[in-house]
Image 1 (tube, rainbow, N blue to C red):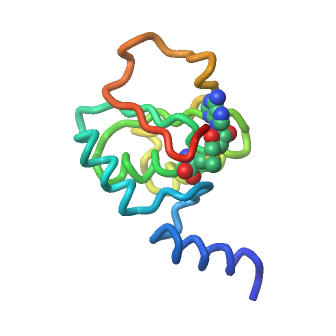
Image 2: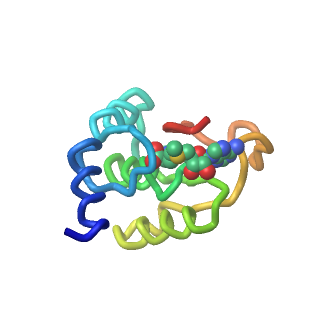
Length: 119
Ligand SMILES: C[S@@+](CC[C@H](N)C(=O)[O-])C[C@H]1O[C@@H](n2cnc3c(N)ncnc32)[C@H](O)[C@@H]1O
């Protein structure tokens, strides 16, 4: 079996779906995040340390919110943007290269902030 096939199987078993995860947050935990943050179509979410788009892209798809996904490595951001585009979410999901330690946004720019497995 090819390595990529094995990694997809492991991700599905551990996370609950193939979502481009680069951490340990499960689909059930992402659903709980959406519920606790009360995300909906009127909201703008910032997902810090978005990696390859998990869970920001999922949260936008599941709740109808708009989302800005922020991380540092360009390949991860490109993968996140592609994931959003592939799901027809390019108009509601944008990616930005930035660090949480040098926050590039003004205060109160977002309705909600998420970060999963981001140290
Ligand atoms: C373990 S990965 C988790 C990625 C994704 N959130 C997930 O759950 O699959 C941690 C991510 O945090 C990002 N990160 C670490 N420090 C950061 C910082 N200061 N600002 C933004 N992102 C950061 C890393 O580049 C990496 O993509």
